[in-house]
Image 1 (tube, rainbow, N blue to C red):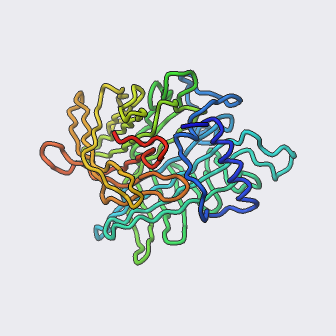
Image 2 (cartoon, rainbow, N blue to C red):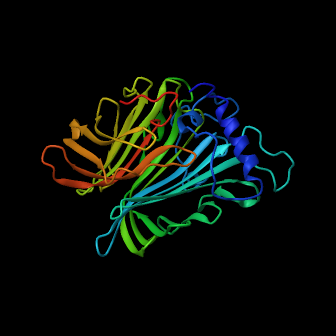
Length: 378
């Protein structure tokens, strides 16, 4: 967490020089990017999220360039006709450069863009992932009301929902995703506080259940798939406090039609922050916002990777007020990102914590555990 305010500038400057004129996948990076550092620090010179503001759709699907960071985040569980299961993640990140190009030409760059694309193959227990960077000059990357893209990786608006098309060295997706319920405005009408100070918040909305169909390919297999996806949209400036070491995030789609999202912001001593939060939604569009005392999330099993980092992969999650006692477990252990940002993101199974009955599927993200300057297990 040291020198937090300088990290976004140094990362952006180094990557922009390295990119030169191309949109490409990285080869290596000298040091990992810690997203909790990039999302923290001072936000002087950037717009801040300091209270509830009504959303304006479809305009709010587009980039919010006055804010320092933003993301468009898809995850989902898919299955082929013969029962082969896959998970997928596609994320587009935008980071505003403190000093963009000022030449007044099409070569100017005001934002750095990063995209993460991954497919989890449950049958083979293989995790395929690729990362790409770009600047926004010359239309190499960007986000409008109807299109989000980085080079050939793109999401386009449909009459209802979105179409994701992404091809990488070992994998590919072409998916149509249609929401079956209205958006969930996280926090206070989309005002999601992450810390005690002014501006330590984000604008946050989710489309928690997207009926998904299309095609998928991995080495040795390609074909049609269907299932459910999830979209998270979030933007802000310096939203994470220095007291946080990372987060544990769960997007859970239950077979009874309910969707549960909870995230556990971790303090430096591994405890849950008072700004942890979540939501529970129903098929008819109703939803309830959850505060830090409305749920508990406790790790029960850890997996140690080749670098010695321990990742908590089985959790007990309880929402007592809604009679939910869940066990969430990784579909398989090694769904760990080994690119510029070290984190774990993958498909999970959901079961009744007391009876062991399968209740659904979802996705889990674990951040901060590989940051060796401040890693504390919960």
